[in-house]
Image (tube, rainbow, N blue to C red; front, side, top):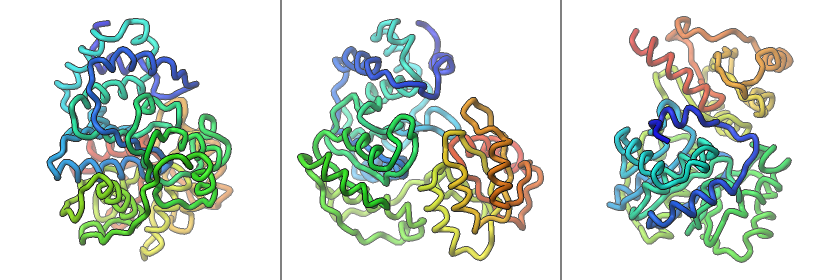
Length: 380
């Protein structure tokens, strides 16, 4: 194969119809002889994986450690998925690594490896001789591509309902699938379902649990939404376990995590009821209501998401998104009608300074909004 990385990935599906774990396993068996893996911190959960990982990776970098943070999906560019020593990876390094992998891996595997599996292989190869690899799971679970390597420490962020077709029909089943990915030690973040503790005792009884502890947060961190403060707490617990104590740190700017683009525009990549609950917790203290710029993938519980956000929004504006997984508009409209919420089509030229906007619904929604915002709104 001689295609460049963009062409190669454009021919790969972004979504799974089914998971064939043998593909990533065989690919890594070949690639592993070219890589000296660092200490691996595997992040698994339903919500908070990306922000927890970035807080951790950023502080480790400030402590002069060589760190690769692998996350997904991205908002605007693929480079966002591989963050090395404080920066998104450059196109030149991505392209040269892609060429190297094409030389190493046989054509039969390159043909069938998925988008996420190949991105994971790129990250694993680039982690060679780093001090730490902060490795965020995709769907999460024992058969996730990121679980092809043995982890030294697993972080379980908040677990809830999502990706039921792959992970299980209820919270207990999903937790079991995710927790079976742990190889040795683990940290359990704040949970909202009692079942998680029961499953932990069942699945992880022979693993080392890092005790819970509450840290005094600096002034910068206390300005964050509560759910992000909780994620900083998890990062600090990891750092103490790794031997870094009484550290001074600054936090990175996080794109799409309750991010204020303007004084009246908030964007968040959350897309499930757990994320909606976190957002609602922040909005309940606001005097004003928000116009929700929204869309959803069809397999998400958008009815429950909108029910949670309803008290804090004045209307919904549906932003047009393309893709086979996007919910049919008539189905979304019917749910909104049943909830008795005013609904309109989104048009960025009609945004007004006196209104307050919340952009929420998925990475896809935020990506679409940011493309329009960067093209139109920011130039006005």
